[in-house]
Image (cartoon, rainbow, N blue to C red; front, side):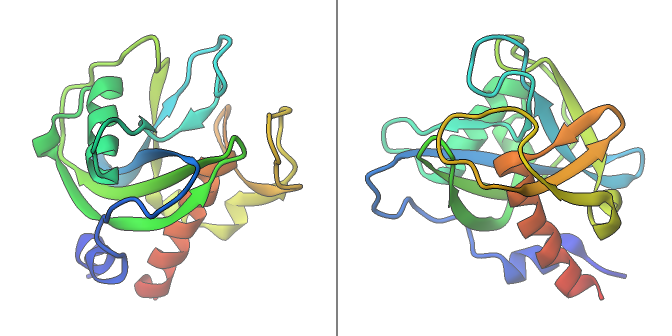
Length: 189
């Protein structure tokens, strides 16, 4: 039987520190949770409004504060946005950092997150979405398309898109998820 957590801890680098950069820094948490007996990835739907990612699906996360590490930033933001207690988060590793279209250096920490009681910050999260990891691993469910809405900054011509019911995963979050899925596919064969 494939042990996802052990595999990811072996192949992903441990969450590290911020590399030198002139860009602003942020970190997100890619929470892998058990839902209905299977592994799911937990996402947040940002509320509609005037903020930059309004109405978009993303990972819990945000800008770093003071001398926080990427893991500390991602954990704090996950607690603030959805109520995840720090002790529920078991880091499995981190994906290669990426630069957002708004010139932010973003780290993505992958973690197993134990069951916890959701407590959503309505200013930052409209709802949570749990997508089955097995579905996210299916290449036939992904499409390469242009961004669905105009975004500030230098946007790639096309990027990965994943349709889940009425929800559409795209942008930096989808690119991080494709990185994760490629790692998992390499070990699950």
